[in-house]
Length: 350
Image (cartoon, rainbow, N blue to C red):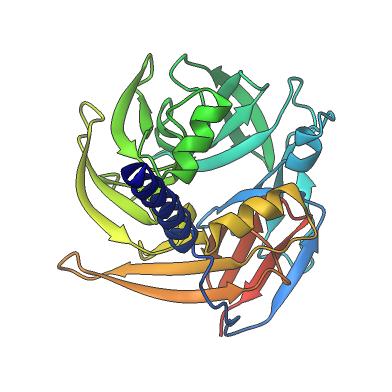
């Protein structure tokens, strides 16, 4: 009996330790001190602007919009890709996919600029609970023209995409498990089961594995490096890319201590990562809009030796925008999107 009691106490203490460690790892003990060096304007009309990318020459922001709370409630909710011209005197949101015939619940997006100035937009689309595709659109005369839908059995939980060539891309599967219970255990036990897929123009294959919630993905301007956000891992994985095979080799990890979401690049090749500094608070926000979730934007810059510097550019307790998922930069503007909000921010950096 004595040994049974000791074992029971040890078991209880182990559970308590695990719970406390999970809460700590998720950032729930952090103190949030809001700051940013300039004004921000709320732009309404694009619900759930989860991902945003900006054309580096024209300043047109492409915004992936999906009303996720309506989808969670089982309501029909057709998402959209919006354009927002940051160079316009009075920019307006323009729905570029209002004529898309199939169900459209866009998630991660990637803008591809070819050598002959062809512009394409790759979009992760959740057509249904178990049906996913990467939609490829060509952008002509301020209009998106749907070119192709690409599906694959390995693409069970796609989150974000980065285009490499007109029909080649990487896409993150944010969970390795396909069951709801398995995915929950991955998140709360911090299991590295998710992975990156490479589509070579004909087939999908795994390019990188053992990632704790593979979220945002992007590529360096020269295409030789792939950046993957490990959201639950609280870091960005940096991979060297083999152009011939598409294989990825882990080169380094950048620990950030925050739940990294999407990754964008500026003209100089610096990374701009949106993050959820308190992951458990974000899960509560996902279930209840009245519960605010902090938002964070980090800038990761590199020197010639490959060393990096991390700057926290934006931090808010969720009152201005909750659950930030992307921070895209054009000139002195920082555009911040969020997973569930009915607005995004256009901020002027000073």
